[in-house]
Image (cartoon, rainbow, N blue to C red; front, side, top):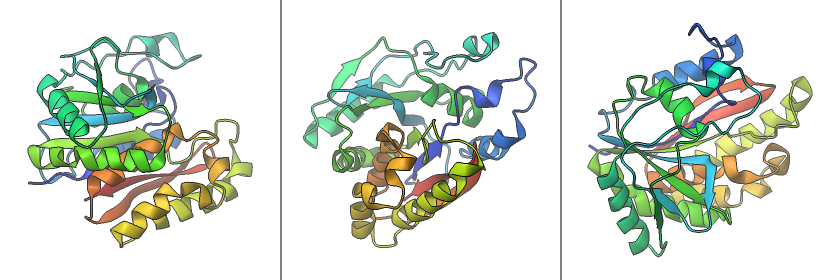
Length: 266
């Protein structure tokens, strides 16, 4: 069974876990939480491992975390104290990590490896919702610091064979990420951007789909939506991993005045 590749929004900081008593999040975040919570059940089979690319890890060369379990990296600021004591204790998947390294090397992407970096909040916040029992091993892979769109699509293509090996490939970012533009004044521009992004990312012709997403800056309000594109690049990895299969937008809602979407490829 071939698993799809996903691009999921990971929210803002620890947005799903702001209540110290464990109650539901702010109503604004509940549709996104529900989408993430249903993501594993929506798959054709339960993955044996997850390979996740987060918008919060960049290295000069694409880098694979090969450790077997790691601490959490609380790389958000100004949130309640209890959110710096969250737990998500899933094991690592060193065998999958080494397989990913081999695939990347074979595709011309010399891959670095590391064992010490903790999982950033682009990993543990959405995965704590999607896999609350922390019972699916996970490998994190970095972005490449040049943020080259075509290279990140190619990185996804290199990793695509893992989809036939029981590994779910997840890009974790945000389809809109301009922290200075919040509220209703941003909504018309965010909606226009999101409409164009969804149209490009779900183009039924996979060659045209790839070309349109690589040329993302040509979409309306692109640089308003992403003054810096690190939160969009995980989408390109997921799109590349999805290959020529179908592409659908399977989540869309508004948070902070922004239209935000999630995608399934393959």
